[in-house]
Length: 130
Image 1: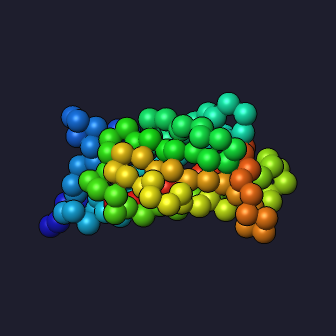
Image 2: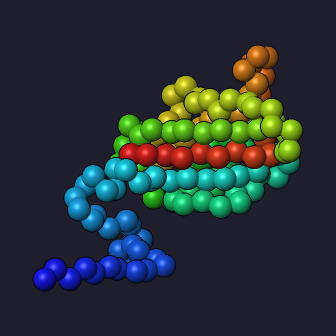
């Protein structure tokens, strides 16, 4: 007979805080390498995050996401969304700032696609995969 087993844990990581490789490298490439939910309006504040140490406010709608543990290189994928005003639901773009994607950080802006202007966003979500 075959006996089923399960591992149950609230904190599943190696002693260094890394995600363990279960079933090979495919598992780690399918999981987010970093993510953040932050308020970029007024004093920038991280609400929740994984592998993001801080957000640098470079000016109106211009932010740098700093990783706690750097990526292997700058060849990761970034995805984000943002709103202009809480509760209104007016979408604004999350855009990559040219030449500022490094293994240690990602510079981006939030702006309106129709006016091409930057806006501070009270709600911004970003995910990173490598």
